[in-house]
Length: 417
Ligand code: ATP
Ligand code: MG
Ligand code: MG
Image (cartoon, rainbow, N blue to C red; front, side, top):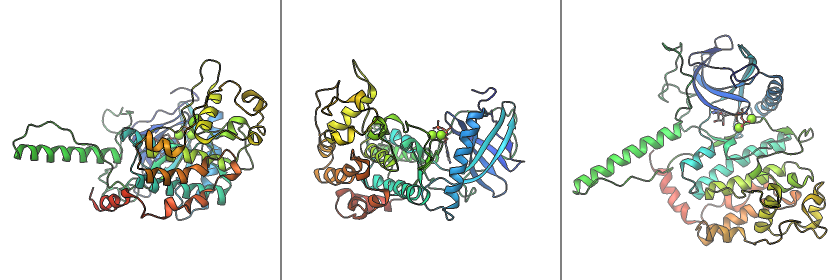
């Protein structure tokens, strides 16, 4: 994709926007762009530089993203609403064409990386709570104040805020900016380690050292590896990637969202609004708490991904009421005239709290409380789902004295990293 109309090839030390930004290392990439850590010579801090592919459709998409991100930044002067901040934008001419560039505040790992790093075991429920509060704060701001539907909420598009903020204090964070192209120069390498990864690595190393010391002092053989742990890592995060977002009154896509996080009204084509983001939020919260996606639909003999997806939803949430399914433009594709699925007849009904207890070994009380929080957000009727603002008032987030892991957590929070 490093050809005309595609990505811009960047080398460490390259400068952008008349010398203001200097590329440091690659942070990631997507279908539309590569993202680099850059040093901002004007503020002496670090930023994320998103360099869009140059072809017209990518430029168009970037302009749309910039429009939304500008409104987001304008409405949130003190940057407290858990949505990524746009700092600057400009055009950069390269051998592959003109690239629109977005300068964003520098953030850390995505929640997807965090889930993988935790070996899909599910995070401590207190961490899940902290993350939910951040994400809901962001959604409430987007929905109520800005009239924006994110349309692609999922763990990959929620980034942790680095515990050490290199954009504020590069020296303390142990970052020395690269100001010139290094000798030999060609280091357009892979993605380097993030803060959380580094921290976990360092901690694991120290734990190994401690354990081997102890074992040695007790005359025991050296072997066991310590468990990775996320203890003490502050779970502040922000919503990113507005490439698919839209103003609620200017929708341009019938099909939105990544498959596993897609709301039922999007599948049956009955029209969507902010509540579609709430559905994706509930799927995300479940995944954080269990390490598994809530729905992983797969087409099979005689049925499609969509049909399997609807079947999985009904197995967990009960049959979709006919007065809802009949409202979908695709009713006839999926349902018979009684409102039952045409091609998938045998459904195995579960309930959310049984699933949490039996498959994920939650304590009864934790399962009940978490299911009470999620269940209303997973209503087939979009208008019955609670809003982000209402979710923020839910006892699962506001009361914090009802669960065993809270006792644990207060201890954890006092631990030094
Ligand atoms: P997609 O195909 O998902 O639409 P995209 O080209 O629009 O991708 P983004 O998803 O915005 O690009 O960013 C690509 C990757 O770059 C992210 O997954 C993340 O790893 C990294 N990244 C993006 N923004 C930031 C940021 N502000 N701070 C740190 N890393 C970031
Ligand atoms: Mg993305
Ligand atoms: Mg995108």
